[in-house]
Amino acid sequence: MVLDTTALLAYARLRGMAVAEAVAMIEEEGGASLVGIPSACFLAAFADLAEDEQQRLVDLATRVDGVTVLLPLTGTETIEVARLGPVMGHAVIEARARDAYLATYDGAQARKHLPERRIYDLVDD
View (cartoon, rainbow, N blue to C red):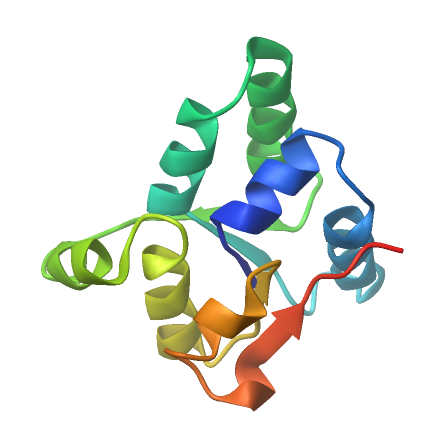
């Protein structure tokens, strides 16, 4: 699973539980899967957060015993990310490359770039 900027912002701001529940679901698999945090999405979210929220985001991305991993932005991917936009561009590229789900609060935008079967709509009750 790959988290986009909308997911990272919601997690860091404690808005709903959908992201935390998705990460917990992956953790319960016992290391069979990982949660990818695209570095460009991390940077976009980090810049938009208050200091305490930034720390929450850093904690998510760097937990030693967790299932999250920061995904680097490399080479010519940068151009495609720039074209797709800062909110989900890097997440789209990573989801495509890894044949992974894209976890997002903006499913409509994600569906412009990925097939329905690759979208994990985050919804809070």
